[in-house]
Length: 417
Ligand SMILES: Cc1ncc(COP(=O)(O)O)c(C=O)c1O
Picture (cartoon, rainbow, N blue to C red):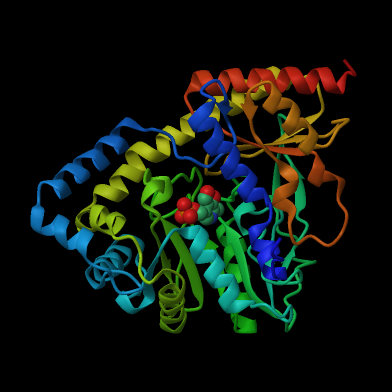
């Protein structure tokens, strides 16, 4: 059989993100009994769904616009009109001094990060992307073209009341050497729901500025949309930062559209890469969103619908898990600052989280085992096999059933049953 190149083996072989997406797709299409607490699908929020249905109908009812959308390739960096409208929107709602030249549209945040890491760290292992807090988003894990392209830092663990904890950047250990190409974090963080403080962002800003490298902030769950963030957060951008914004958690993962806001040099390079990889973006997402960028529909939706929805779901899921586990096993739950995950630390688990994942799958509950999120960490750390990511964007009934099974399994395992 044909041999694959080393990069072919890396990208074409199994990976955490592929397993996650595969499990999700399989269960969605052939196993309706599976409780989907694993993936990153946004919740079906009626107001949000009805907005997109209306936009879809408007687009369909306007033959000239529909033809333009379906019949044409956009330029590789996105529709010029969309980029203008997006820059206006960000100036108005976030106060960022950006222009269309700083905006590049790409086929989803996942692709955007592959381009960014390739552009900045490359394939020779001489330049690194530094992740100041591990665990970080599973989707980055296999995107480094060289094994030394990623370096992740072990965080401090701040314990809180009621079995809660929070990861903090250990600035004493954060050393940005000459080989650092960029610093990157998702905020709110997937998988933990962590949001770092404004002071911590500013400290990262001054460290990266001093080194002349960009700070990349992945806002897949944050600002300006979908706004699934439950603590104070000031949306920040300047030309030394790279911010990634996606339409996915705004209810549109199917359109595969995201936006990077960056210095013109970086935005242009990303658009050029997109020409090589994809020719152009799908333009339906841009057509759906563009008219909404002019008014305040999106900030209002984020503030009045999406944020309260996830916040309430977060409180429900966390409260239930505390009720189920409290006093029965030794555990920690990461504080809920944003996003739509519970990050559960099972301190006395007698098996690895990967084995627990398999057991739960047998019992028709899909979660994501924590070890996938600790890529780029060079030192051994038992903690990486003790955590689970549990998504709470499904209906409360599914979340309840799933959490009950998780608790049952964990309690039985911990007490040797
Ligand atoms: C933190 C983070 N970044 C990026 C992505 C990629 O999203 P998309 O490619 O749908 O824009 C995700 C998806 O779950 C995510 O959680």
